[in-house]
Length: 264
Image 1 (cartoon, rainbow, N blue to C red):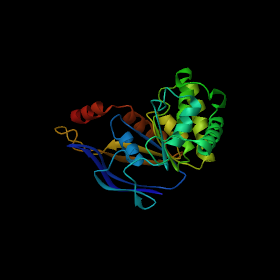
Image 2 (cartoon, helix red, strand yellow):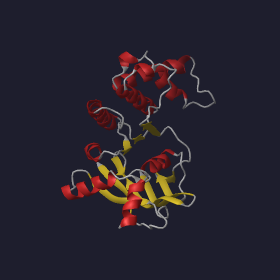
Image 3 (cartoon, rainbow, N blue to C red):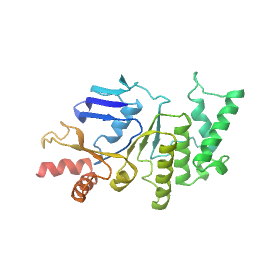
């Protein structure tokens, strides 16, 4: 379904990602971990189409991924991507309207009724049916993330992109969201890419875990080299020593990583 061939991403003289080579089958749940600033979210944005690669190839079904977001790729961010002036129902219906041609995305007549019916079905799936008339400010953090997921799924995407969607949630709510995402992944037969800083979360949710890290370092030019995928693990096949090594690298910030290699 997805393939990257010698993918590189640079911002001016700063190399963020280098030599990314991978293949992903439809239906996999990929979790992405790594130190802060190592390019995980940048890679997610390239999948979405809001960032372009500097060199190499990123292919979806054998064709270059379009350089703009599309209905086949839905995304949920850590910061709730909802419209504060709209009700829960209106927010989800808006996701349907944005798929229509034209500048406004307004829905009328039969199209509006159909969008409302589909939105209510999706709200029922994520447990927000009884909150459809509330505004985002009246929702808890977990409910707002449920709303963002409903928005992303209403367009029936093949690929769901999750950029640290549960990082700001309390542990109990986070556990509920884990179960929700796993259920929706199976029911909608999605291919999921999820960025997380929580290694245990990555192993719990994913069928496959990628670790982004730098393999080359220059103390005199810390941005001369970018991160690549240093581990590509099938979940359930990781020994404890490897887990601890990955966990230590994930908790480092980009600045701490550069300093560590400068000292060594």
